[in-house]
Image (cartoon, rainbow, N blue to C red; front, side, top):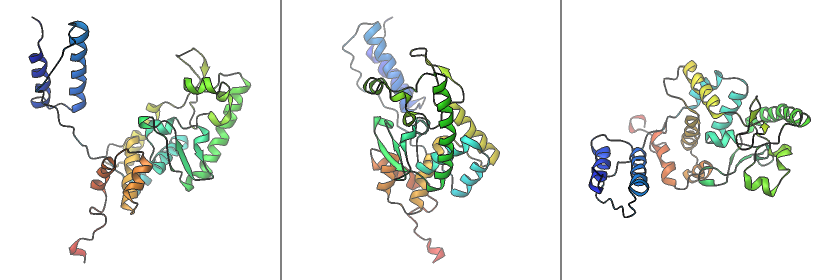
Amino acid sequence: MEATDADAVGFLTDLAVRKRVAGSTQNQAFNALLFFFRNVMGRQDVHWTGVQRAQRKRRQPTVLIPSELSELFAQMEGTPRLMARLLYGSGLRLMELIRLRVQHLDFARGVVVVRGGKGDKDRETTLPNSLETELREHLHRIKRLFEEDRAQNVADVWLPESLARKYPKAGEQWIWQWVFPSRQLSRDPRGGALRRHHVRENTFQKAIAEAGRRAGLGKRVTPHSLRHSFASNLLDAGTDIRTVQALLGHTSVETTQIYLHVMRKPGLGVRSPLDV
């Protein structure tokens, strides 16, 4: 028995109506069916009208207030603690933090430069003054590691192909090195070179989750919780939402507005009439 368009429409609608799957799950099923119809059944005239789309669910972000953040950071030490504080202090996404290179820390202007963020967009965000000394000491330590790697002829740091072609020797320069390099060398699957990559994201994710458990916060804490907290706490302190939007790199202010719902002072700080 051959699958029909009606079968596909019924299946996709059932996912949304009866099984109440997320929109991304329904889209994945849609793409799989489309591939099957076109590449297996040889049908190019696929027209599925009448599919009821799954509603996109807007989840409330997990936000930590300053006292909870202090408790979280108190359960961390060393480089993971520095990474967590920078993640929160600059509102970075996890991979933006992991992929920072030395030249992206602009101490003179007090900014973190994000290259190729979500949507392949560049932006600048704040570099916390309170982290300058610790970051400089960290860079001093990893520069010694970099110099040892160069002395031992370890392969230069990985660069995107376009950059590697344009600047063939850039990977040997200090400014292009990872701010948070891995402790271990690893074999590059793209060419087999033995080089030092950045720290693995799951290692940092585990460190954050474990610190959250030890702090007893009663919340599921992830690296993204720190980005959420950056936005919410800035808005709570009276920062303009457009400024927060720019710092986060959101295309639309509507994305940033979700943090208005998790502020400690709903209504932008309006006092309760009971307190007047």
